[in-house]
Image 1 (cartoon, rainbow over the protein chains, first blue to last red):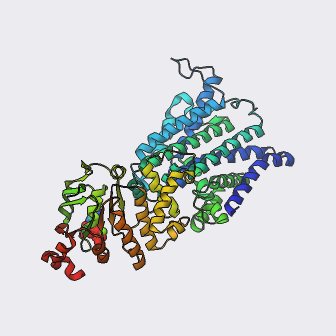
Image 2 (cartoon, rainbow over the protein chains, first blue to last red):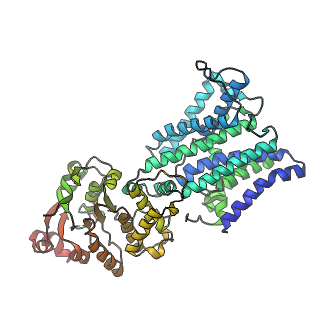
Image 3 (cartoon, each protein chain N blue to C red):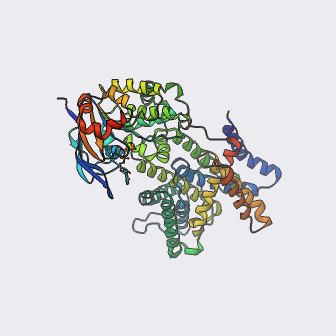
Length: 326
Length: 249
Ligand SMILES: Nc1ncnc2c1ncn2[C@@H]1O[C@H](COP(=O)(O)OP(=O)(O)OP(=O)(O)O)[C@@H](O)[C@H]1O
Ligand SMILES: [Mg+2]
């Protein structure tokens, strides 16, 4: 095993061991913290597909996170208030996670498609600015839309259900989120080694080469952005379920920035980079957040150190340069 | 006379006051190597960019396989079978040599929309990529990161990627540039055998290679073709001697 594989295995082991430790140490709240970390990690894995594989610096991933969150909020709100979702067709809301996830994935993928079609006409700084601008547009739209709570957000009374599980038990919900994360990581791993991944990798590095072999680098990137948005949207639905609350905070540019920070601290383009980054963030937030309101200064320092000294993030610092696949 | 595979008709391109291409009409015929020579800044790379797409001519048109492709994008021309190599290597530096060749094979297959299958497990793509690497002699560095290749090896990889496309015509921009004598001899032999598979429009500064390979030569000076003909005709042409060969040969 190389060092990166060892590090990944250690992170995996820690994630699996958290609930056991929490129960043994009598600190059940740790499970909720770990759930938060896992969901943030999932959101960041989504961004890493666009950023790490595709080289698309999207500063608007809060859109997908928030769309996923509102997909959950709106469906569950209609279900709990017994109001039909679509009056004319008498389509009801739902409290079923699989259905909610599906809706979250499809709507965030659509959002990524629309944004991608427009943003991918540009590149570099302009791409960053356009994704940021879309983020702001969606954010202000959500604030001014009175139907679903506007600035106050939407509260959901009871966590949504998953067949065969009691999601109200923290450890079961944690296990569910962890399974989703692992499934998406497996998908990410295969994607990077697939024909599509090869084309995407090249589209990031030398788009003109991709064109000269007869492929369309922009379309390849667009598809990657859609997959990326869908994953982050799924994370948004889980995050809303964790908090039983969704608000425009999930759509804010600060949220986009945080997702970006997870990826950069952990390691852009490294499979477990987003997991390491999100984990560290949640740990710092918990321990330093108690000590000082300005804990994010420490986060900033770590970010600075990573950007200055280790391009591959923490994973890169521990495991060295990325190996080329295959 | 052999069939015309690729041709330009009256191509003109201006960059402000510079006329990089002026009324250029060239043919590439089946089975031949047509060399384009000319001093630095003559407009050779600009011509290639217009032939392969990516740069639209101000006037004139490009025909490939009997069709007007002037308005078609780079990738459409590539899919028709036009393979280009770049003067400055355009390779995925973080990827392995094999991956770069695989990209060509993938492009030729036209099926990049597969997301879960390992690309290395696809026998047909891999065979194609490995065969191309073997032909340029890069098979023993297939697993090396492209960034770690020597300059000469990168030039060879450029050619290997073009080979994976099994094209109807090659357009090569100074493939010998920066190759050592061993490398250029090897490439000269390879290109010589390649012309039977597909004709080559060869921009080249290495006159030894041009004399060894070219069936016909066009001389480009200040964006204009001042002569086209066989090697002997070009050697004898007074305008060429004055403008170009005089100080190069
Ligand atoms: N994008 C551009 N904008 C402005 N001028 C350009 C551009 N591309 C090329 N030129 C000019 O057009 C002329 C032809 O350039 P080109 O690169 O085609 O020459 P070349 O024959 O390939 O030279 P070399 O032997 O150095 O490769 C030069 O004067 C160059 O400065
Ligand atoms: Mg040139």
